[in-house]
Length: 136
Length: 136
DNA sequence: TTCGTTGTTTATAATTATTCTAAAGAAGAT
DNA sequence: ATCTTCTTTAGAATAATTATAAACAACGAA
Image 1 (tube, each protein chain N blue to C red):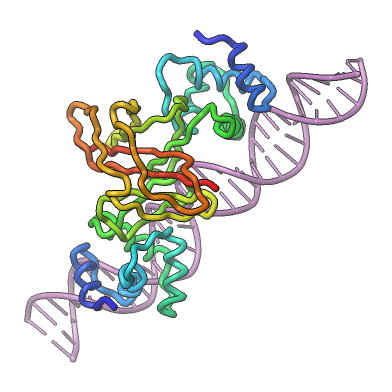
Image 2 (cartoon, chains in turn brown, red, blue, cyan):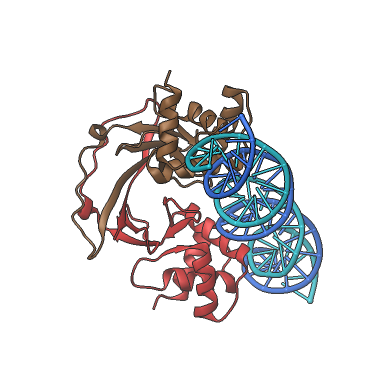
């Protein structure tokens, strides 16, 4: 069980005032042991389920985007019509089960170091992401 | 300059009748030396520009999807609101210039072999894709 | 604490990418 | 030619996301 103060700190760091709605969002996002992969729609429904209170979709979008911008959430590139986010913001890779539309974390040691031998003048590497798609 | 017969063969292989519209689409997609990265919207506009004839958006979507299904086009996962495709269907990776929203091919030797050390029971690997994001 | 300022929530409208639909037209086989 | 089947197309429908603006809540100063 994470503390409310922790959530408030995350919110303040993201230049967001700690409101009831945002703290509910934090409960669902950060009050867990394992990493959490979700779409906005998943999150929206879970808030109602877990806290009993409804938060408007617009607020969910705004808050998730602010956390993403601040680096408390990571966006995961998948060929899909929905954007996936991850509460594990460390540098890591993913399996994506195409059939079940589910993401699974890969530890860095499961993939090994990736050396990019090419560079583009004037540009630097921001991130390196591996996506391994799984089929049956 | 690629031949019209080549396009017709690709279309037939994809269970598509070779119509004027589809051949125009092929001109833009396949009549080039270098690999081509595009969104549907890019393609739609280029057809008008390059062939002088307009093809409806629905036809562009249908044709691209058929080619994708048949393996003549590859879909590229990027965090974006638009789906990107690639005429280079060999196994390879990408740079993505976040600022300019542009994709750049990476040769396999630019990245080196990627060894996935983890496996999920009942699932096999369908693809391994590396996306390297670039910033200024 | 009260008041004023500024930030927030919300329902709803707007936007954007994509898919669907159904009618008119074109390709293929006989 | 003719018939059947596939295709094109404009426009409607859908779905994810973003914008809007009015009611409301947090904050800080007096």
